[in-house]
Length: 262
Image 1 (cartoon, rainbow, N blue to C red):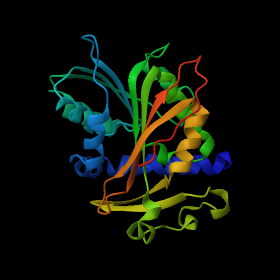
Image 2: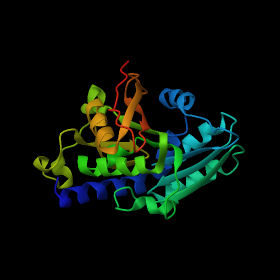
Image 3: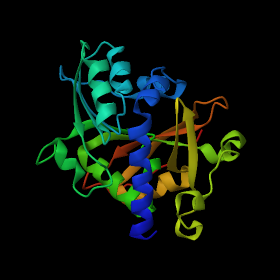
């Protein structure tokens, strides 16, 4: 993908979230089955220390509120590019008792985005990036961001990714928008790229890429992550999101990434 096309797709998504922040927040207040299951799989802190967790692409802070329900201490950092969603996240999480939350604005498409967390950046027991990589155009950019995520995790720590499997659903493929409608040439995008509409309170268009199981494995290998587990959940179909849990290999490890299929 050339940089002009990549820039155009990134601009589409920045405009999308600026336009739909409030209705998007309202539709992201419930706890979907996949995130409930993930809540049970995420580690707790050990030796009296809070769990250190980074939520990259945190949106309205829903995961922090879910972690609060576990009743155990968490040092939580949420990162998102949209200032309105971050403001809503701060409002939602202001009264949490067990989760100490702070929120930081950063654009994952920008090189060096992790410096927003500090220089040098802190490390975390778990780094979570849910339904976010799918909005980054080009495999190379997604791979670079997954490498960034891996660097934020401690050796042996967790990196958790999820991605929307919209191309498996006829009800979503029926809604696909033509590339020409946004001035992008169809031969300049990658397989799995698509445009989908939003029509709740406001009308908007977003770019999304389907990261399937095979691409998840490629991203893991590029970042030195070991595949630990995965599952599908959510949506009317019950399988609209793919969740994958990875462990970060230690620098000395020569273990090849493993796959645990259901």
